[in-house]
Length: 325
Image 1 (cartoon, rainbow, N blue to C red):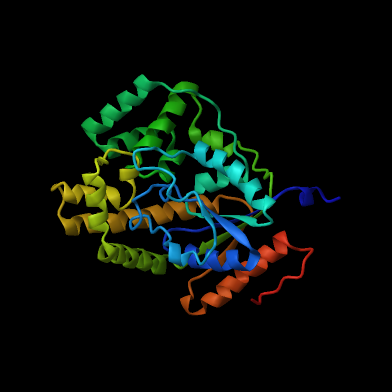
Image 2: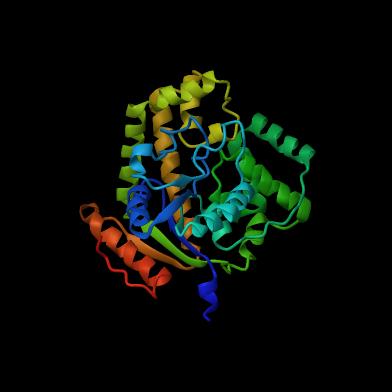
């Protein structure tokens, strides 16, 4: 018997923000009878819909979605929790005869499940964490990010200066073990416990940036300011992990009276472009990805067919699948 046949199937779709993962994922899930697991670290939060580009119920077209709206914004969500939940979800979905399908842009989360990363239990140094938090408060987020860049430039390159919790954790790992977090990640075996198929969506860089800016304009039209104000009114403060997410940090800074709206929008668009660049950098270092260029938006059906053929060829070689619906 082929050992691979004994492993459960796992389909993964990754790509930078605004590349078009949602529309393609729904059609692929429909064709293969899949259930979608969100691989996005922000869509877990209730009440954070517009700024996270969260899929609407009517857009799901009856496809079950998991790990969306499972936390309130004051409850941190970690890669360890994502792994734990996926370890339960994937066999549960498979037991119903459905294909587990992770869709998202948070590279570490997706890769940690795809290859069953083992993170060392380094414990915690609360005094060190508080020291770093105080340093950021006194000197700014960039100064803390610079500290990380000095000891672990690889981790600093993939973390936004606003991502204070993960920056402090990376500093803490180095502080407690003397080993860089990036080195820990690079030493993972990268052997999947699944019959794994990873598809990556890519796009001409300038086109992607235009789509990002258009999406942000649309978010503002749909009520991003009102969404952030509602969260603030509920007592979710700008310092909370969820409120440090793209869109929420910049708009909260405006609503507090410190940053003019147009300046906040410019910063949001710039930071989102940089985030997309970091996403692509992460994905390009992943192994086993089958890339699909979706730059030609006039032929979206062809892109879906190409993804379909990749999945069929990698996960269903023993069955008759074609690019027809």
